[in-house]
Amino acid sequence: MRRWLSVLLILFLSLVLAACNSDSADDVTEIDFYFPVAVGGDIANLVDELVADFEEENPDIKVNANFGGSYSETMTQVMASVQGGNPPELAVLFSIDLFTLLENDVIEEMTPLFGEDYFDDYYDAFMANSQVGDQVWSIPFQRSTIVLYYNKDKFKEAGLDPEQPPENWDELVEYSKKLTTDDQWGLEIPSTGYQYWMFQALALQTEGNIMSEDGKEVYFDAPHSKEAMEYWLSLSQDHEVMPEGVIEWGTVPSDFLSGKTAMMYHTTGNLTNVKSNAEFDFGVSFLPANEQYGSPTGGGNIYLFKDIPEKNREAAIKFIEFLTKPEQVAKWSIETGYVARANQLMKLKS
Image (cartoon, rainbow, N blue to C red):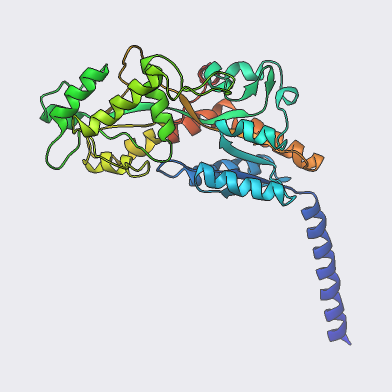
């Protein structure tokens, strides 16, 4: 008899615990957050840290952080989920994906969700990729620009001043020739992944952009675009300071770190990766000018998707607010190299 009573008691307690756990689970809101990684380093681990910190502050919210691969791979996964009727709450996607997402009517406008002063903390150049007119459709987050990385030790070996990187296109060729040896290139500019971005930088340095501000016209055959492309090709074909053919986006930083190239054009998002792994003294500079200086912005924004439950929407907005706090912005910038927002960092210092 006692044994049966014990069994019944255990069953009763199990049911009570199961009910408690069920109630507890019902109180937790789960949201999906997709993000890409387009550079080296431990960005995926950093995202996990940010998620853990957020969940500690918000035990009633669980964030399912999904690493989607590259920007294009992440976009493909997100759109597959949307078309399957199961959109994620949030995703970091290319800033230039904005019009595709708007055309498909799958994202929510951000303007009414935050205070009037909230967007004042962002660089105008970043906001230009985040809004249409006065309507804000995404939040700048994983933003970057192109910079010149150069190996100061290699500069010294070539008789160049390690504190004076090339300032114009002629100097870039001159420096690259001195830095090119039998086992080392003077310069590498990637021609895969984001080749249009590199081309855009060269065009901006020459005269202007490769498209109109409204995105309805392209200027690929404009004189300044032709001059930019001819210069890019001349670096390998005429001056022989850069490899001919395809130069992979992902291998350029590896070539720089291993000493296969003395200079490279790459994203600020690779800064911490280079800083952590370079076994030599290196410098970072603005891109050399042609007629003027110029470097386009790039990287990803946070998008909020439509057709999600209200409680999930509220949880997603809370996660955006957490990610864009000055403390998190500073941490993200320091540990990745992605560009932080000056106003936010000034707030943090004050």
